[in-house]
Length: 255
Image (cartoon, rainbow, N blue to C red):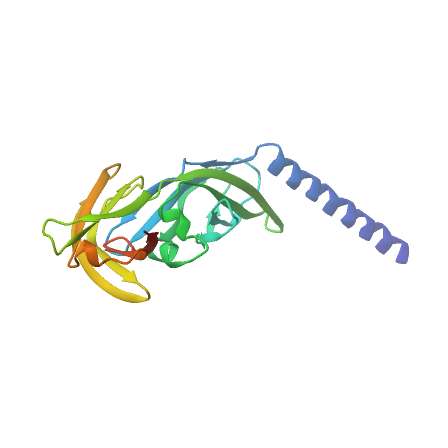
């Protein structure tokens, strides 16, 4: 009796090992196909969010179902800062079937602009990386995953931002000249507020409304109610961009 049980146990282990080899073979030999689309951005202007979208297609030509198929992703800048992350729902793919779904990575531009670690991306180009993991359970008991790295480029909305002061249209005014190029994938509109400080005091302030289209170079003139002759030798100009897509502050020492 014991000998018979031993033989049965050995047979079961051999069967399980054979099943494992077959399952791994079909997963590795091309029975499961996954295709990704090129990442692309769409803009949600109501919430100031950029959505990076990656389309995923999984086809099952193996001999077992695929369970809990899902994608996880994170978007990083060149310094390793995680800009956003997300995952999809769970999908089932039967034998001979396929499923299509999308992974959304939502980047809040104001959060990007107000974070000291990532605010540089408002004025400088950057190389981004999408780290994506595709997970599934094959043949009901075998977890399987594939890790994909996708490069992406970032164009800032205020590329080359710079500012200077010059005499205004009247003797008692000064103009803040602001220049930049919108290299982002979105247009924006709103106020540019200018604050001029000297010796720790607010000397004058003004603002201008503007609309900036994609790839447009912009030159703004903001009138400040202060006589140029009253300006100290050194002063600081602070710009606050309050737009439909982001809020961002930037300062420069002048003198």
